[in-house]
Image (cartoon, rainbow, N blue to C red):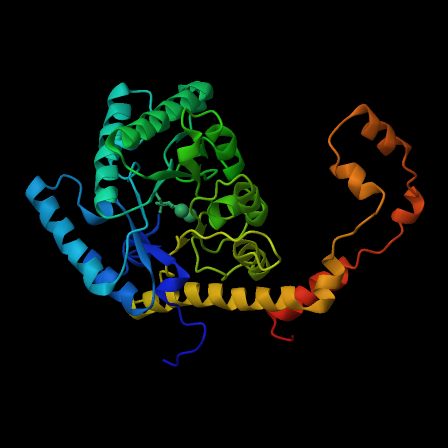
Length: 393
Ligand code: GLT
Ligand code: MN
Ligand code: MN
């Protein structure tokens, strides 16, 4: 394999979940097509291809029901693999969806035994994450939802979810864990409807928590796209609020099941705009957290194809960074998106509200017809972006 400037290195902060490159290719209509990989082997392979981190659910590493001795042996081996291969664990999470007890949700389930078990499991998984060095803890409420919606008041579900997050932030504080929570939204699948369906819902919910400063979001390209929304806009809102604690990058077409495809393999323009925003090539403050690829290889692939998939995610990200930098350095682009200024109105728009500034603003003469006739050159701007994406510039 040839090497070039787009080969990933740990400095790029790319991570993969054990469940992503370890995905055996199971889908609702067919069983696994690839062998289950040992987590230590995944760590070794990730180190070889230049990834920085590996993320995990409790059960990705420690099979459900393992004894304490088995757990300690598995964790010991895993820590050694991390050290030997220079790979870190930036994020950990809890599997609150695979075990049958969670068939009607975890934190929002009607049965207190289910809610209590979800808290027990999460506290144990948080301890594991902290032991492995994780700094971010993700909450994806995949089964927190309904098909038979009359089963509970959706307001009660919100209250229960809030109780769980408040309880667990207290647990971290009590234990002295410097762990930040990142809430991941999804509109549906595996449930018919999932509560707190988008990143915007999560941001509003976070403002109602006891310790909102500990909690941010983990938006996923596929999930925001399933809702028909702009991932870039949703991420921008989270960044502006100081709440982008983590991100799940992948590929998705609107109107489909959760495809979790290789990053950039669908809607390259949206991927470009997202990378441009995250990297701040247009001048905004960049995102500096982990870049996690929550995706998996096509079911057609063997083991070699899995690592082609992983390399592809990282290379596409780096290629898009280079394209975004070139686009934003282009004088024609800069000219089109340059700030529109007005020596009279700018000071009025930035002045604090007062009866005087209101009077001045209301008295300002604006040529409504002339302003509406100026061409904004967005056709040219968008074509320039396409030309950068196609390598014509
Ligand atoms: C699951 C889901 C992902 C979440 C993971 C975290 S698990 O694969 O589809 O989007 O990020 O629980
Ligand atoms: Mn995800
Ligand atoms: Mn997904």
